[in-house]
Length: 176
Image (cartoon, rainbow, N blue to C red; front, side, top):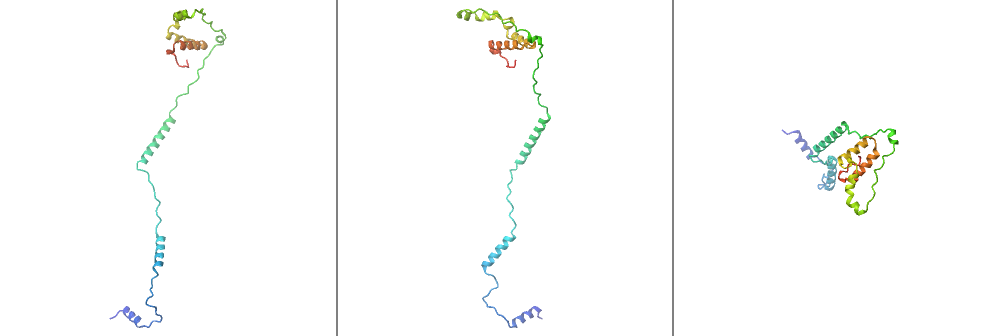
């Protein structure tokens, strides 16, 4: 038995066509048009290219985290700990009677000797004319401290200047 498809094919072969095409005509588009259409179709369905991402080295995140924690702890400890107290100005109390007293008389003047005699006798003469506390540097500094505590600042400053001039090796800080 024949199938219905075979019968249909036989019918088409026997039938006389109403319109005939030339044999050289093809049903395909020209190759240029085909390439153009296929290229545009490919571009239309192509997914977008992802943006290129640059990543940091693997060690950078732990280093950054450690630096951040160190900075945070430093700030916390600095804010939490009280700083050194600011130095306070020293205040001295003086009686009005002490300031109105005339200054102490200067030591007696020594007559000047000729230059050749001064060169020979200068050390023994100074040692002999100076008070006992001026002969030893520790006792001299103790006398300067006593003068300051007694409120005689001007005299203490004068003694300190003389001490610094004569004994440069024992010069003390300028605040004394």
